[in-house]
Length: 318
Length: 251
Image (cartoon, rainbow over all chains, first blue to last red; front, side, top):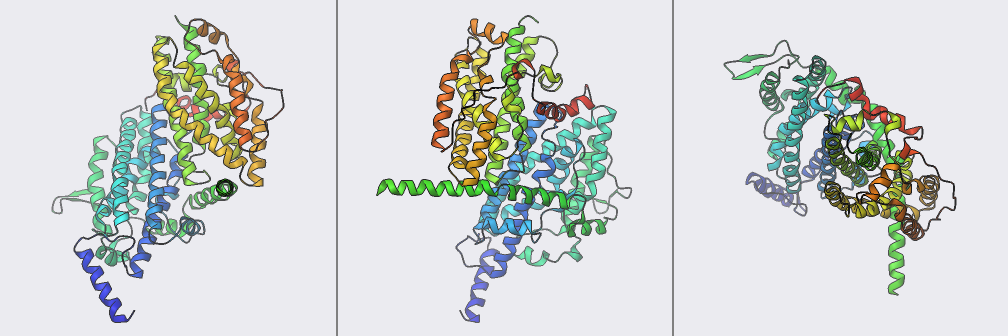
């Protein structure tokens, strides 16, 4: 194809996106579009799967049967999200095994928030309320993103995530209205998860490398800073409602902006965790790689069995 | 308690689901593939759902203010009545599948009899559970076949798991005192009558999976009387941790 022809295709492609048309797997797309989507979608899938670990940590110790069942169902939803996000990514011409390799070798990233430990039951509440809350703010705009399979997957993901968020908030509410010991547990969890949750919305706009291109492809609709502000404005009243205190001495309502002003985020901590040196990075990867390696003989057996079955069937036909 | 036999009978049924659900829950996030991970979590979820139905009913029968969580999480080790089979650890995937399979075949047969119980609540619970357990049997049987008739390594591992777990199968068909009373009242299931068909079914499937049916006739028992293997204590430490550390609180 000549350069002129490619330019022509690119123009048509961008025009389709501008008209809010969906791009489908078999449509022509620029290489960069494909690569960016593989990166972002697989990163999202990895986050769902690694995100199962900090919560899975509390399944055997959940304080009541009702909570245990809800937690199991929630983690199962996350595995489901992982599954269809991987499938959606595969439509771009990459296999799930390649994506796993990228995760296991450290080449692919996943949401840094899951590199923090879940040390008390209240962390199950804080993750649902804050982490899923921040995730929804990131993800709702993706229901209208330009790549069809991703947009469709996100509609279902978002429905379930908002259920998880309410469930998490309800855990926190119960603790906050409980005994002093329970309330302390809830406050402590909020203290530990608040700042990492703010970091989930990504680096500040001046440091964010992907924003402009992503806006054009509708992978992003608002900037990181705008999303962060939205999250804070939405979450502060929720904390007040259940009598918990946001751990930020500089947090203050700004009447002019009709928004909360907030304190400085510790970006050194953010980059430390992103670069692989958070409290749980090594453990999370060890768990994922361990499950994959220990499961190899099982996957091999399934393949071998399927092949034998097929061969027996063919023999019967002959 | 007015109907202690019925209470004990229900606990005997429910503790199996409780302990097995706890074991399957341990696998969440660590399965050999995302699909099996989801399936194992789903089985755990089903089992805990069943446990809640049974314990809510048991709480009513007890007639005091004990809740499903009190019954599930605040008994002493010797008061749990599950069979030894379900408390065996997740040594590897073959053990998890073998344990599930050996229990599922029994569980399905048991529930189909429990559907005929004169006790309408137990009958209704059995009706609901049997749909879930039919799926469990299919899942675990399929995996026994895949592993038995897969690679040399998987066949060896599956055989080893079946050999080790075999010793716990006979206990499924033991009758406790509460069992006998409940059978005589038309409420309980006579498990002794399930035995022959169980071994027939299990043997048929093992054969289909190219595995040997263990010949050993040495069996372990005790779970139904609360005499467990050493594994149960650790499982209960996890299960009971929150209720013991923070007593009398709502979650």
